[in-house]
Image (tube, rainbow, N blue to C red; front, side, top):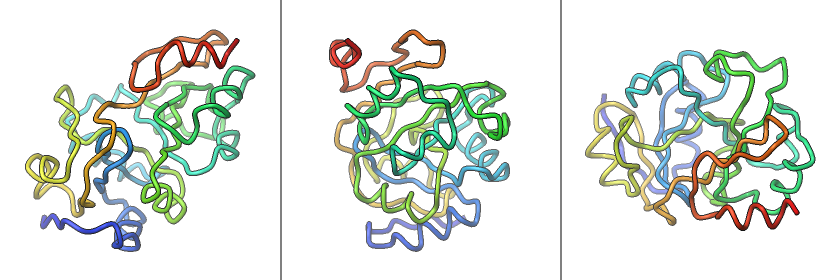
Length: 201
């Protein structure tokens, strides 16, 4: 497979590849991402294979609008506060999924991770493709990659397209599990536990 490196103005090409069940790589405001169309088993299988990721580990959904979260998950009061305060932004929330979401896309879990990126290019891509499953651009267990050259070194010949750029934060998003009623922080990124607790007061 030939891997092309494109500018951000190649939005239509990136969206077309996603629509054709391909894996594409792009910078976000946290780390570089690998993304596929949500709802395609073929695309998700390819993503797991390329990343060498265990299929028992779920991959989060990316969407472009906070109001769309309720299409896929049950939004409780704590979630509403976090969505209002931090989304779009460097946070992933885990919620109970709605019954119509096939468990194939949530690694057989009854929860789903959702993130709305604060990145103009990625939001534009999501507006064209609809929801995507997006994970950090790295081989499973390795450091997250943060620029197009590093991604090219690892994934050249394995994916069709890499969008040029460098991610901003260099840290993966903070992950907050709100699915059980209480608040459990599973991973800390640039949004701190103190900031989250302040919002939930």
